[in-house]
Every structure is written in C-alpha cells, then in structure tokens.
Image (tube, rainbow, N blue to C red):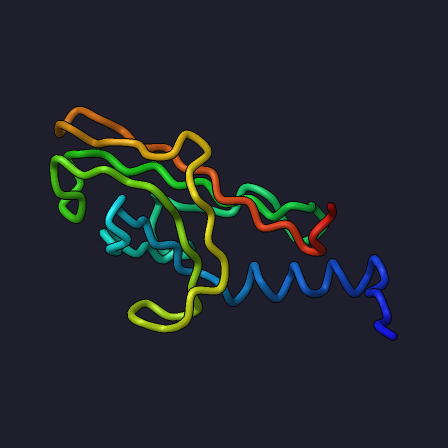
Length: 121
C-alpha cells in the first residue's frame, strides 16, 4: 500500500524542485536542445510562483536577437535540469500549440512551463 504525502510534504517537494531544478532548456522540433538557461542567473527565465503554489510555474522569454537563439528555429518543448550541461531531464513540457517559430531577430518566444506536484488527475 502506498502512503500519500501530506500538504506539507507536497510543499516541501515543490520547494526542493524550486531550489534545485534551476536550468530550463528550450528544445527544437527535432528534439535538439537549442539553449539552456540558468533560472537563478538569466533574466530571461524565472519562477513566477513558489512552493506554496501548485503548479510551480516558470516563464521564459527569448528573442531572435539573443546570441544563443539561431534564426530561424522552430521550438517544440521546454525541459528542466539540475545541471547546466548534460544531466537527466527532470520535467518536460511539450508546447500546447505544438511548435513555435522564431523566424527573425524581431520575434519573441514566451514559454510557460508548469510543474504539478503532486500530479492531480
């Protein structure tokens, strides 16, 4: 028999995620990582909720004029990691619209990555 977490346990898990899963990668439609941002250091990414909230929400905004964004690129997914290179994907979120393209230096991509813990069905 499994034992469910208490509300305090769930919040503690979300706090761990917020403190440790601090790299968000943007992935193209071929499955290749285009860029990985440090949520704590890069102003283009941030947690917009905290451990008291479910889901935890990360927002990312990149532009075609950013040095690490090749133009054109078709994006399809965001992924979270604990490390700045390689490592295991800890959370993945396919774009609801399927894909989004940055076709010029004037384009902006805004991504919302939600982490629901516990998963509520």
